[in-house]
Length: 164
Image (cartoon, rainbow, N blue to C red; front, side, top):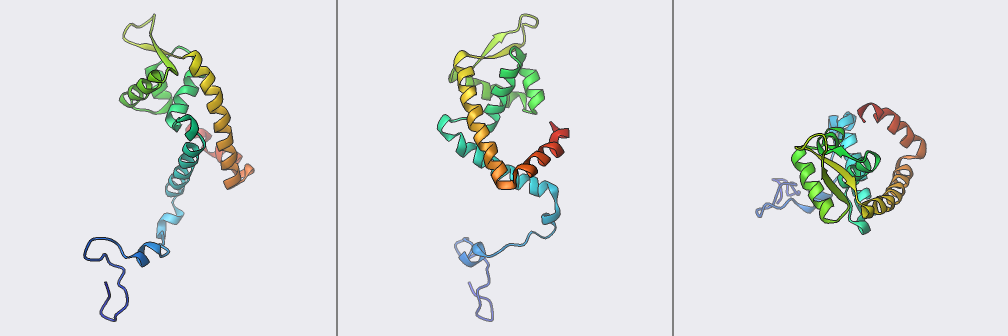
């Protein structure tokens, strides 16, 4: 589409697709460039993409890794405690645990102290798998250090420690 002066307008064409020149041009961020939340979100996207790529061979996602790590460090913890500690909605955690159970990585055992609750444990296969996942996650953390620098990574962890 062209403007009155015959130059491309950058507006969508009649079929609703944006013009290629518009999609390829540098897009300013205005105030977003100074927003910590925006920068953190963009970094989080990069981190998740790298984590998923680095651990693709073992088909483990960041949240699954977090859940297994917490269970491995705290055998017998309740589903409610895991959900609360990691900030995961209970319904989402139940779905996630179902998948980890199908893969024989995690098991739920009825709590001896509260029959309405389940205690969570890694299976033997889960313990072995978690060791492998941790090695791959360490590789991912090396990628982070390469991206932002080792000292910046350590400083970032220090800054963010009040949120963990």
